[in-house]
Image 1 (cartoon, rainbow, N blue to C red):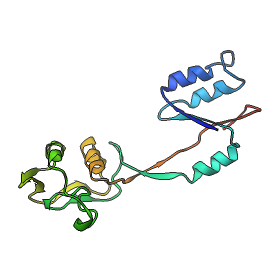
Image 2: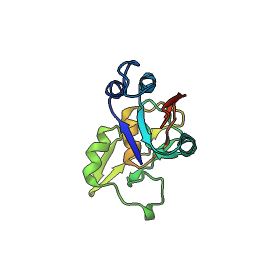
Image 3: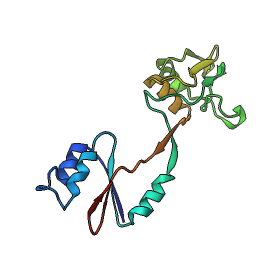
Length: 168
């Protein structure tokens, strides 16, 4: 059985206990010091070694966030814009819906509608390899399905049940 909690870290820390006196169980309050930033709590009946083994190899593709670094150059070719921005052959792609023209133009692409198709007069570089991405670039990359980031989980602390001994 597994339960995964993401939420306000201060609320999760308070629930575990901030001091030994208000700790829900022995040593649980020691976990509250790790509850800062982008973290969550996993409660499971599996042994810690099995969980550590699983998450050590768990990596998924994800869309980049503002402030991350571009891992490759992404360029949308001139002409009609397709849903994958030129990353796959045109015969395997579909044109970008005309309803998204104002959206992509608002994100910085100099687009226009020609006979109901969203088009570019010249190629548009969304990002170059090594660029620090801004929010417009990340929204365009997501719109075109370009997942250039990796999602992984780093385990930082463990309380082993049933002994509830603290291990880091």
